Length: 439
Image (cartoon, rainbow, N blue to C red; front, side, top):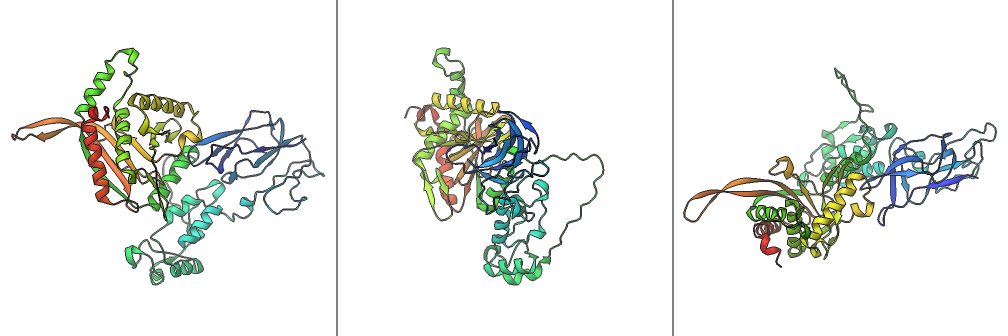
């Protein structure tokens, strides 16, 4: 008897997953536990295992389709078996039959998403319509040549007025990158400067060996989220350096401490996370999410930490970090990083952050521009420790170790002066972190 394989539930907040790649095709034999496909959430990728033994009778979604959790994505049964599948579409029972009786060969029913795609994903169509971008103007990078959301984001320009959006879609005109309206807004009159779109773009020949690398998995998730972050927020970055004398002194003391204290593994990064968690309680506007029409400020600091894992960039979350001791933060950091590296981090451990820290100091980077982890209001970039000249009151100059800080914030949610005050308070807390530990 045929059985449906459903998209498994991934945490409390994940409602759907995108099918990244099928590892099987219709007609293949599978056993319980075999990997049928890889799928992605907005935070990570997962492997979907078969929950039945038998033959693959149908794949209900194509690569690139979005499948709701706890709904069927494949059907497994005996070869030649006729099965009717209940789907969310309005197909008749005969249309939903999986195998043809005459040939006993499996037939792959097309998902509702695939039927209505017309060369693009629903999210891409909706976004293109909202931005006034003709689909014919876009280069398709999705599975099987489909236009997907990131293709629309790559081509998006300044916001269009309603009249300009309607005209651009009606006449198939690609809007200019900047309009004559306030803040570069594209007006209907600006469309005269645009050019009618071509149905295809010429590809220039490239000499030498070319390696084609599919964009999928965590890389695909990261690409989409970075594009959404840049296009959906108003980002401003402030750079500063904090006196790292106390940081280095404490780190040296912990490293040489007795083993039974469990402090020898405390790192500079652990100390930075501790300082950030305490500073955020003083500035709740930065421990927040910006949702466009409202801002959510959180009493608990759920600190995300950008992690360079083998599978790509992941952001595990230290829950309630403001209530944890330095030692507890250090232990939790090591636990989460280990799970990111061995691939066992769960969606719940990779979601729900209220503020993110990205530390690239180990690479010798002094300052950089971190990209917001939307919908968070701000993200802190931490650089390396370098000596900086400091003038004393008597006019003498000495070199003092300083650590680089780069604060990117969403100017839609907070002002630059507020960001400067937050960064200054963080600098002071880092410089006197030994006192901060006593509070």
